[in-house]
Image (cartoon, rainbow, N blue to C red; front, top):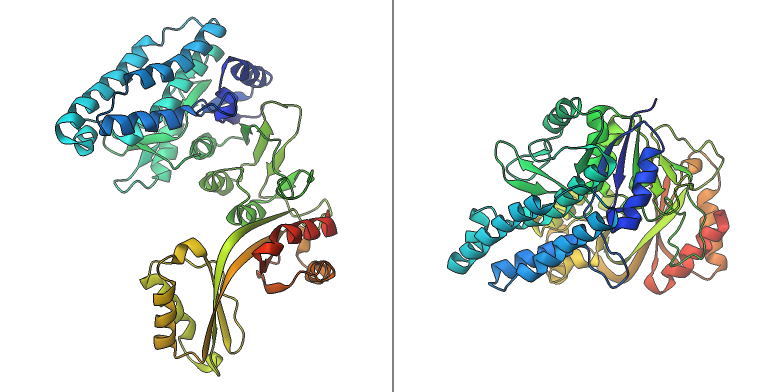
Amino acid sequence: MRKKVLKFGGSSVANASQLAKLKNIVMADPGNRYVVVSAPGKRFSSDSKVTDLLYLCKSQIDNNIPYEELFRMICSRYEDSVQALELDIDMTPYYEEIAAVLAAGSKAAAEGGADAANRVGCTADYVASRGEYLSAILTAAYLGYDFVDTAGLVLFDAKGRLLTEETYAALAGELARHEKAVIPGFYGTIQGTDRIKVFSRGGSDVTGSVVARAINADIYENWTDVSGMLMADPRIVPNPKPIDRISYLELRELSYMGATVLHEDAVFPAREADIPINIRNTNVPADPGTVIDNNYNGEDGKVISGIAGSRDFTVIAVHKNMMNKELGFVRKALQILEDYEVNFDHIPTGIDTLSVVIETKEIEGKLDDIVWEFRKQLKADEIKVIMNISLIAVVGKGMSGRIGTSARILTALAKAGINVRMINQGSSEINVIIAVETPDFENAVRVIYNEFA
């Protein structure tokens, strides 16, 4: 019997009907031993996520605005599910436990501001984490599973960095005492303290992956409201084909360019333990979804696995005669970016040229100063700034060693009248990055998709 960890996102625990679907999925396989849950998400398009309401609650406390009615509304979200599912659980003590911290924070904030509220434990991390906390308690009661809190098990250092080995050991030790358990996602504690620390938004995916790694699961199933990954953005390409299998390396490349189905940090714990991740749809559980697997090498014959892209990049193009003979030229350019705390995305080079591709938002208010430093320190013959550039990543294990893939991409774009400003291919041969002018972006994605789909 396979040992599985299942993580359910906010849409999967949004209300009683979604929780009923969750239960059917969990009970269908005795190997479904550990369940990680998010806070309830939106029930309908104009609804609010519980986490957003909790952050708003904290903001009202910090600004001396009455918050009690908002907190009662949050509690009612859980009570609606308790009553609809006819659960034999009294959630009142848990609401009162949280309400006491909020009241202490409100009193402290009135006397000394937000910092005073934080000092009595009413921090933004604590307040936001209570969505998952209550969700896990309710779900555990519904499934008849144990509730295992991640406080004291998912551990962070004083700077908020996850302590992976300590976390794996703590989770493995505690979960060994529970045959089946529901675990809240999104949060843990600072090691050696009872101070709550949350991951970035979407961090329940990370919790699920960490739990899977800790118990050495056979598979980690991530249940959400989409049937896995698609080959392209459906807002650009009508009805793109689903991705059945993909490697961790391919996923990393697509995620970097904006294909976000999983929280980026959720990949690494499972990957290092060679645990496949299966992205599934709670609303259509019969769909197989997408399997992310270390061992996938493009055996299905597909040339590409997917296409992803991002808009709003700026290129700083530097030309200097005999640049290739000048020691440290690239280092100097990157040092200037580091001095201005600017990350770069790509650095295509030629014999006498260097182009630095940067997200436009990274250099807002800094561009003129950076160009000035480039002129001064690099003594360039010419510097051009090219705005309004978009990048497209074409990713696939099937491209490796296959002759003519880049030619197919460029030919298809040329036939469509789309000018390629830059092209860059990684040494692994699983990705090709194309730069086009932003007005051509969506058409370029469609052209490439149609060439390979």
